[in-house]
Image (cartoon, rainbow, N blue to C red):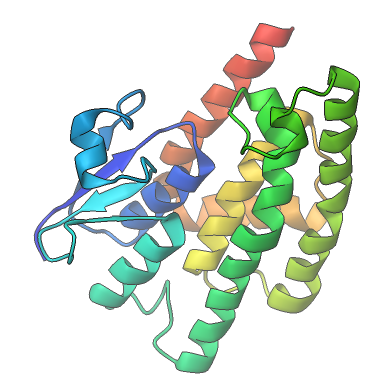
Length: 230
């Protein structure tokens, strides 16, 4: 498989996941920052969902693939990256379960808690996107932040269960997705439990610049947002 075209918006932790993965997996890729371009006719012709991250390759049925977990699962399977996405079906099922729990349960809470502070648009129907006053929106954001503790505890007690990573002794694509997701909590000064802080530090130590370089873009954006409110 020749080089992959990776289209990203750098401040996003969804994009960060794939940016970390392709670096950690040592894949041949070209990265394009498409900030402000995702609703252009050219982009929409490839991706009518206007979502990033998105990879492009002629081997794909439609030439393009988006959604961070789908991209990581596909590329890991395509390139035999068993260290990041085990070929053993039972172990793979646990990695998949953890990723789906992130995107189905943890991330929606995190988005409601952090997007208002990050300046990201909220989904229609969310309190933060409604015409309610700022007091109602702040209450909703706090309720979401308070609810994050439960799924975090699930990752700690069930998916990790005494191991350093969801993947066991080494990080998996689920660990990449979780660590990237947790980066956004810095914008609301969320009090991460000690195990989560250790987990994120271990991820960066284990993956080195493959993690720290993409994380730097997310952290830089968070610092910028916080400086505007100081």
